[in-house]
Length: 266
Image 1 (tube, rainbow, N blue to C red):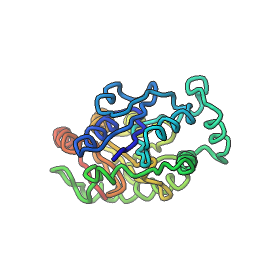
Image 2 (image 1 turned 180 degrees about the vertical axis):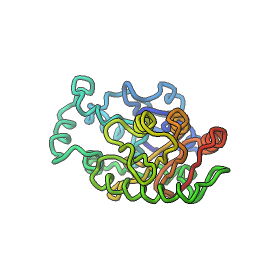
Image 3 (image 1 turned 90 degrees about the horizontal axis):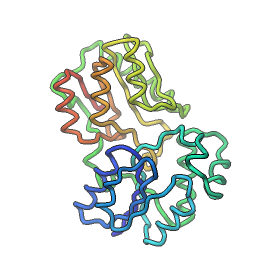
Image 4 (image 1 turned 30 degrees about the horizontal axis):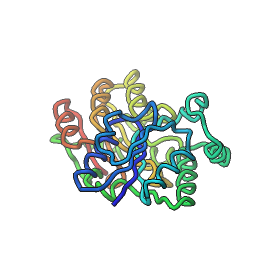
């Protein structure tokens, strides 16, 4: 079976590609220029590096290689939509961009999905093929949250869902039932580091947006998240169970235990 992969930045695309090849799937990979890891080519049966703005070219390449199911994976910084000289949008990309009433993540990604469907390409959740990446429910680390930390988790969870409903971000950092930082354009890692400039021993909460399509932008964390939490002197990472992804789970849990950081799926 031929599976398409559009790869952005970070380690997740390589993990997905390696996992799919290990399950004997054929891969057609579009590596987004300036974002995707060059090493992805070794997992591909068909490979092309392309500018993110060349939507027409990307779709033609996928159709040429008989891709019917497509996974979007890896980071694409939201600020890129303002860098028109860098992304060099073609007419199809411009049409899609200007059809958006707002430029929130969810609406832009939904437009992408609709355009692909018109071309006979169905977006699928990466967990369809890699369910082992989903965050399980419960405490993953040796240390458990205190009663006070659980109160902050519940408080942060509700706040994160509200900012998600407004299509602002997926992450909040809280302490003593007070919001320290909210994710927007900068992403989760920068939000954690920014919070660490002001307050220590915080709780980081990351959830899916209520309206979120997990085929398009599932919340994801990895080893770098824990490293950033160590730098920011944060204490707890709470993730929405079954609706978020953990990259290299065991390595991440081992490092969290080393740093005395708690991870919980809730």
